[in-house]
Amino acid sequence: MVKFLGVPIQFTIVFVLSLLLFVYLLAASASERVENRNINDTNNTETYAWEDASLWICPLH
Image 1 (tube, helix red, strand yellow):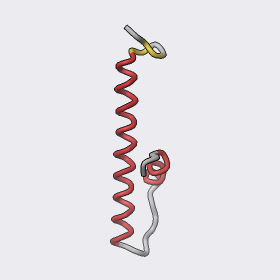
Image 2: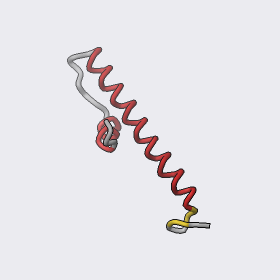
Image 3: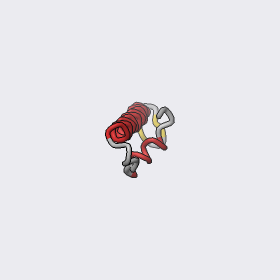
Image 4: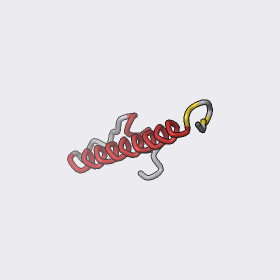
């Protein structure tokens, strides 16, 4: 069995892909929330820390 850093390569691949999908979906959710907040209330441009962080982490958003 092929291992990467002592962990089976199949587990490593699934873990990395799952992490990438999680980050992408988190940033998509944050982006949608920020856009909806800006459309509904033009005076409130405040964002939450998790929204800023997820948008910063994801290169596609």
